[in-house]
Length: 155
Picture 1: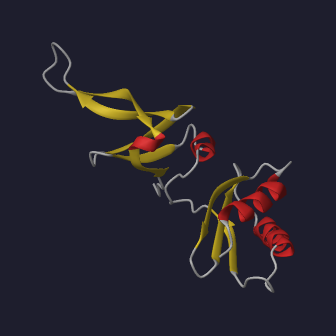
Picture 2: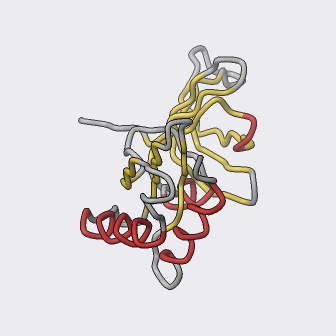
Picture 3: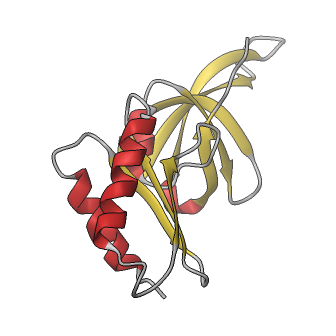
């Protein structure tokens, strides 16, 4: 079986001096290799093809046969790496926490493993009969949410 760290080394070599970043590498038991990359401005198919050729130049099908797929992280897919969070600062995201609560708000900032979104909530104000909408910052840890993903709005 082809080792993940071997493929990762080739991908990282190709990514040097480029604004792309590695999102994920999956290798199944039958040597199906799936490489996901991303870029702040989107991924070009020509770059996926170039990375695919680069990996194929470094792996030998004579030694071990494999299937290779190189693509971008899907727009509606959950974030897998911190750089994806950073790229979506100022955009609307959806977060599902570990208790099953779903929040939709604007990704405000990212610090290390923590990120903050601003959500609109109804809150009861002292001296008011009805609750009013207020902006509330919610802080989450990337490794303590079920998922975070870009919120696709077709309004």
